[in-house]
Length: 127
Image (cartoon, rainbow, N blue to C red):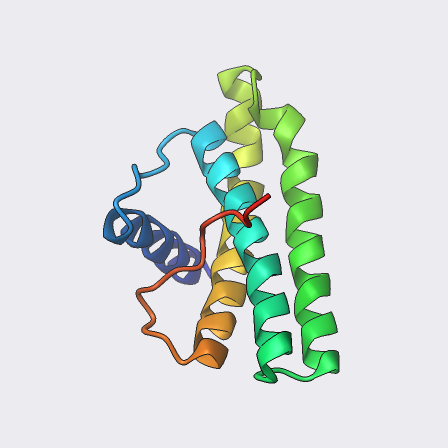
C-alpha cells in the first residue's frame, strides 16, 4: 500500500513538472493542487459523456468518486490551511491517500480519452 501511495504521489509530482507547474511541496500546496485536479476531473467527465466515450452509469460512478475526493479535501482543509505543523502532519497521511485516489481517477479518465499517461488532468474548469 505504501508503495502504491508513493507511486501515485510521484506521478502527481511528475505531472506538475511536465505541465510547467511548480511542484506542490507543502501540505497546503498539495491540498490546493488536489482541489484544482478535482475541478479538471469534473470537466473531463462531462466532456467524455458529451463525446459518448463513457456511458451515463460510468459518468455517474466517476462523478461520485470525484465528489468523495472533493469531500475529503474539504474535510482536510481546516486541518491544513493555517494550521499548526502538528495538525498538518496528522492530516498528511489522509491527504496522500486522497491524492492517490485522485490520481487513480485521473488515470482512468486518461484511458477513456486515449491520451498519454503523462498528460494529467489537473487544470481547474473554466469559470
